[in-house]
Length: 483
Image 1 (cartoon, rainbow, N blue to C red):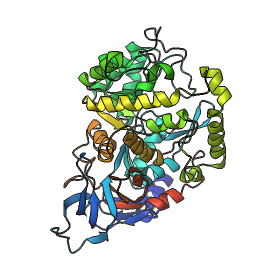
Image 2: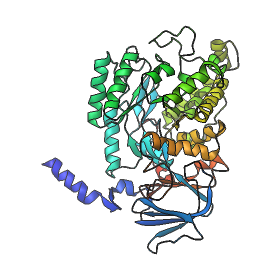
Image 3: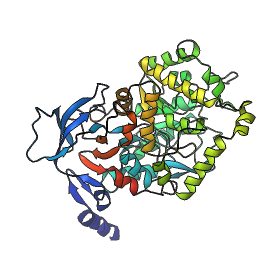
Image 4: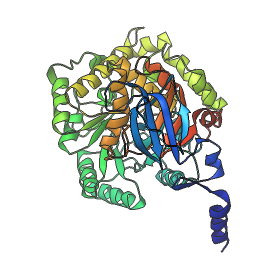
């Protein structure tokens, strides 16, 4: 009875209507624009298709969807619309984050769920849809999704990934270790019943377990991605995997002495990776094989950048401000250790780290994969040293794609439309066009000319409701790493 009374109280007192959804006071505190019809006038449009930016456009939003996109000179602005004059601003589709965990490193091989801070930061950064791409607390992720969808807390739309599909021998204490194909099939079906819609295979999974996961998932319309070690990319493609995470830097198939179904003792070999040729030989053949099997690759350049370079990137003040005192100290300490010349010399026999060259090769791989017709996705992976966090890291990923050789509009296309296409939602999100959901990011400046402007997010529309990015960021100041 008490639960019923509380439920009625929540529905009658705590929520107010905005469009077709009800938003709680907690969410409304961050709402900047809530009119049934909105006109974004004199705005530059980067529509997510890869086409050139269009100047001086008017985008009309009605009832949560895009009603029209046209030149401002010829546009008809509805009389009842709230008009926003956006001279000097750009609008892009909401980012679709395809490796966007809800957890963060809080200790030695232990990760904490950032159920409060990360949903807010993803939304503040312009990320309106995420795939969690591996869940340590899948029930928590599912409940966060439910609460966001019901208007009870601010955050992006979430595609919840099931718990990691990991084999025996895992280093991670928080993961269930599968004991064969039958256990794998039961695990996949159980979590599909709970509401997840995709899975991630992990480092020690066996070929038989991966095959069982793919079969069970595909039978029910779900997809499987993987951060693999025991299985190389070409073998995974042959087993029917849909997506591979991180790219070349985690593919162990090129390592001499790699044994079938076993993760090498030292899975990362930056010296070897940096010497591979994307245009000929085994790596080129692997690229063509992935494209042939329609296997997507998710780029997660920020997590490698943070862990690979002793002098870059410069830790942004906004990132340090978001971290809790303990997390901030831990990140800065790790940064100092990673740049220690004696440690580099001890590990690699040289004071010059091989990781920058390997990172450059990863960028070459991603460019070559996309040029060959592969579907490249974008994410951040907020793990590693802890300096890559929700929202900010998604923006950095787009910047690094440009550094890899993509044009700014190509990079935005990868981070918007490609993710929507993989998720089967390209008819609803991923580009700016009439009939699509009004998931839009209003940016001060012109990221088509200066990609760093993508960090200047001011308003994020999700289903036509505009959220204040600065308020969302301020609400989690000093929190990341604790909750």
